[in-house]
Image (tube, rainbow over all chains, first blue to last red; front, side):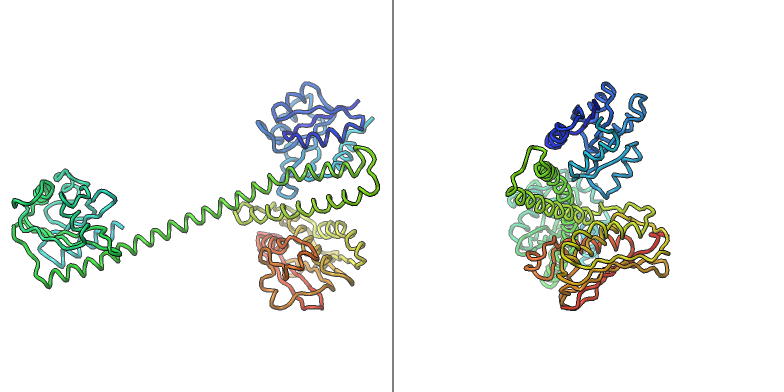
Length: 122
Length: 394
């Protein structure tokens, strides 16, 4: 079973992804801030990480940079979720080492397709 | 104000030579010495030696206070006389004078200060004509002081206004961001309900759910536009300059809007000459501009065609969007690019739209060093054109 780590501080957003993935074969693990996200990623070595950009304690960009410096997560696909599609966040995400990015507001089904593209369900 | 007070003291000393001059100003319950014109003593020395500054605003003890309170000239023939207070004596000894004349500085019937002329010998008195001159001089001095105060007040007010406007824009920017978060959730959950993630959706519920989606997206666009505008107004909008492809921009707009055009049965044509070289600027924002214009055209055109075109000339690139829509009355064109100025309030309800798109488009075009204009007449369609340097900053 493929594991996805979702780092996001907003409960509603987490619930959307939780509900979205419940009917799939992916297993979801959640973290609520950047620091916890990095710790969890190193602990469970997920198959894919969804990383919100605006996070308490440690931003998604910083967290992504840290994970790229660790052998365990160097090649893990990281999809960053940016707030403003056009303000250059996408370039910053790329520079931090993100595999792909998705701008809010995203369609949950677009997110699912993007996940499937990087980590097939089975 | 200080240079004005110094100048007043010096002028008074010249006019009423050989008197020394002091200017005291009232500030609340106290009176401060603000300027002095005397060959014998400096302002600091006088204040230090007298040891009584700031003077209390007490007409019983201080002649300056009485002069200000009663708004009338006062003459003290001998500061060492039997009727003078300790305060008067202390000042006279520090200033080495024995007699003085005080005239009030009066602004709008309220005393704000006093000009004092002093002489080292007792018995000094101004003649009627000289006293009149001194009063006229005092009136002029008040005007000068008030002008400077007004000037500073206006400067301060305008600074505060600017700050308030900055705060407003920053508030709008952060507010817009806060508004998006719950709206994202509403749209996300609704889309999943529609996508049957939570189970089968009865046929007659699908339409209202789609209406939620449409309205939610409209609200989101509105918030996005307010956010963009607030960032522009706050001076926090920056272009993300990079190489971009004009062909890609036009294609992204065409493919996004094609379903809308097809739905309305409109011809929708987009052409780019194949020889347009790679451009440099904020491709995302320029795509947004083109999207706003083409979206408007599709909105305001009921039949016929909407056409996007590109031309390149002298290092500038010109985009246009032409339609066979309702057109714009000549008198509405000047305010067209101003926030919330759709040509008619009823148009917004019939055709939708935020009233912000054109204003934002204009600002982005101008940030690129370009310009935007429109050719249109009622019933004859509209053609919006904007032109930007092919390579910004080159």
